[in-house]
Image 1 (cartoon, rainbow, N blue to C red):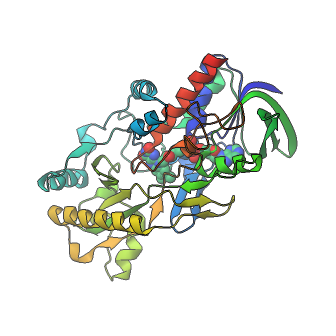
Image 2: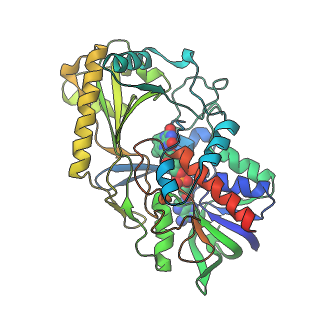
Image 3: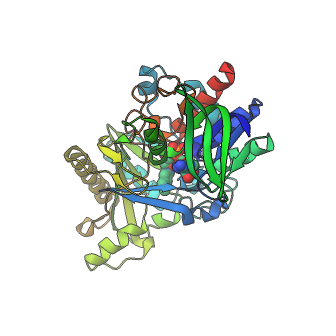
Amino acid sequence: MRFDVAIVGGGTAGGILALELARHGVKTLVVEKGPELREAEAYKRYRIFWGGVEIWAVEALGGTSLVSSGNAMPVLLQELRSFGLNITQEVGELVTALRVQPLPENFRGRGTKLFIEACENLGFKVQLSSKLIDPKLCKNCRRCTRGCPNNAKWTSLKALEEAVSLGAKILTEVEGVEIIVKDNQARGIFFKHQGVAHEVHAEKVVLSAGAIGTPLLLRPLGIREAGRKLFTDIFIDVGAPLLGVSLANEVSMQAYVKLPKIMLSPHYTVFLQPYFSSKGVKLPPEDVMSVMVKIADTSRGEVISEQAVYKPVTKADQRLLQKGVNIAIDILEEIGADTSKVAITFPRGAHPGGTAPLGEIVDKNLETEISQLYVADASVLPKAPGAPPMLTVMAIAKHLAKQLVLRG
Ligand SMILES: Cc1cc2nc3c(=O)[nH]c(=O)nc-3n(C[C@H](O)[C@H](O)[C@H](O)COP(=O)(O)OP(=O)(O)OC[C@H]3O[C@@H](n4cnc5c(N)ncnc54)[C@H](O)[C@@H]3O)c2cc1C
């Protein structure tokens, strides 16, 4: 088998890349470790890594885009530009093509409205979250992070389906991917599919296996630094009782406050319940008001192996989290929730990145020290954004695809 480009990982970035390349007639192969599922079944393929912070991702065709909350905001554009990577145009193109915008007002329930009002009363600038969600199809079922059952949310699966219709080839449930390198140039990939070994020749190889998967493919090639500097935008939820607020029944994170390195947004999670129970407080989800505190954490983690990730909450992270918790409690108090019964969840992370950073593992063309071997996914982000990175990751992938087409 011969291809112009082989992409390893059919997730968020991999899907955008495959579509953009297929649109330009580039013979493209995508190999994905996970299976192909219906979007609504995405939750079955959550992969949780624990290394101090719980890091969540999805291993399936479509990748972690399948479970996103649909938030789409440009992040780190300035930082990327300082390394010579300008993706402003691609961000604009994606925003237009995917109709990225806040959900209409009728989607905002009492919880979101109270959050907005309280933040404004406290003097914070509140912004509405732009979403990759079609309001005509969204049924407000709040299942975004399980997998949308209504085809309302953009996922990479949609891009991959279109890529296939334009001639791209996709193989799922592949195992043991290795990059074939000769004379310091990528020549293709090796993998097993349905028990059969394949060696595929490709002019260019792009790694889009995500922040955990990509460094594990780079290290056997001698790129030993890959996998260090892992961040994940650590977040916790701070909740308090508020009778009948029903935040649990709204699309989450419809508004947010962005402070330096801290983001606050209305967000209900079932993980609050054990913390209420441990305080002897029994609450139905409808009576919980909660605020997510997300921080731009330090890049002190490391991908160790397929099974092991190290991601401590550093002292600096703790200070930021505590600052965020104090603000969240102020907001809850302003809303009128019972802050004598506050519950706070354990630290989680849903934005792993930084494991093949720009300026260190890849250059401004997203190429590694091995010629014709590129990386396009959250690994290349140079630091934690402390805010949803998906739009930026998608724009990076689109940018690389355009460059590969130009270079032929
Ligand atoms: C619950 C949740 C909600 C989120 N909500 C938002 C949001 O609202 N907005 C936002 O901006 N971000 C959100 N994020 C984060 C966002 O989804 C990720 O930052 C983004 O999807 C990362 O894209 P990626 O291409 O780097 O990785 P992924 O999309 O994870 O893709 C990597 C793919 O590579 C595959 N793979 C891995 N290793 C191999 C291998 N060796 N061989 C072949 N394939 C491999 C994986 O199975 C996966 O399909 C959320 C994350 C979670 C967990």
